[in-house]
Image 1 (cartoon, rainbow, N blue to C red):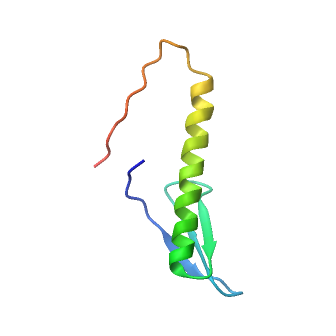
Image 2: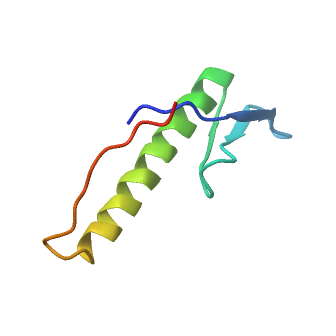
Length: 72
């Protein structure tokens, strides 16, 4: 999946950093460094998108059309 999304990163009170993606509800990550928090957030986004896609595919009839769209 390729997409440009927003990462909001803040220092955690107990040390390290946490990150959220406002475009993907529930997506968050954390790490000791900003890079680790971003990597954790990327993994969370990927898991959420894959899980949602798997869920929706279970209920689709066989004749449903699935195509990829690009968002500029």
